[in-house]
Length: 385
Ligand SMILES: *Cc1c(COP(=O)(O)O)cnc(C)c1O
Image: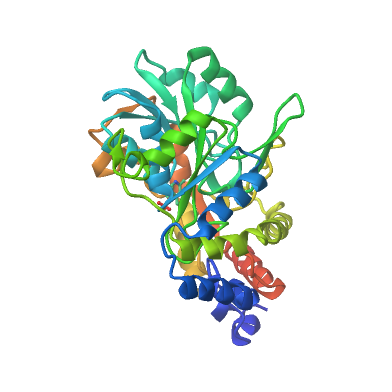
């Protein structure tokens, strides 16, 4: 079976992320949107930037969306808006992309790295509680792989201790969370600020770099906007030290078009995830992704847990069979050379360490065909049988 499928060329085309075919499906609209930018030459601060910010704010049901140059800048702008002092502590998960902690260190703040939940891969109320100190000011939950952290208990804890929250939603655009009282909120709309990335492979990706900060608070929105524009609210009047971080008009024009398709893209990812779930649910060596009943899952990544002594072998086997896979993330944040003498580590991070040895992410995008999914599934089941 496997051999015949390989022979038919199905595996040749499998990619982790297929941006080309996604583009081809909406090519006329995208090309026209780009051409309009070329015709008007309003490359910076063209009308598409504000229009996209408004559309995204409406989609997420947040008051303000402030676009910027990338998701890492979004974290930086959000943190700078909170007026933190050097040495203030910021709690982050040890199992995340480095950007989350990088900005904290660059701003002279102290990243405090905590363990994550073995099911959701996100930080928990308990992990935050263990990390609290008199210097704790901010908590940065990362909605990893497309599913929200347990925000009900995190928000409650942060309220008790007077801590700010920045949600890193770079992997969770479009995910929603339902609170016990029935209120439904978008990822990024539950903390003081939310940040996201429009890197091409993210769920809502542009054709270059891009990012945004969300907030419901007028004063924070004003500060973020000002900081991202050289600290000026009026031209040539600089109230604070800022940076230059903008979303290009061309990227905004592309995102305006792609936002129309985001729900469809999310559904396509969820359908792939459902197919994978069904196929692997009864395979003993494989643990399928946990679904938090309080959150939707937009499957930025579809990540399996397999036995540590089988993981790298599986990756090699898949690679030989031309099925791409990725390890997100192979090394805990605190074990990275750059972060060994920065900040503070809480506990033994046993879950994070275990995950780094056991996780493997499968091809996940909006363009996977049934034949491709079947081939991927059969190849993995072959390996374990
Ligand atoms: C991608 C990503 C970022 C950074 O976004 P960029 O646009 O690449 O700067 C931050 N945090 C997480 C969790 C990410 O996945």
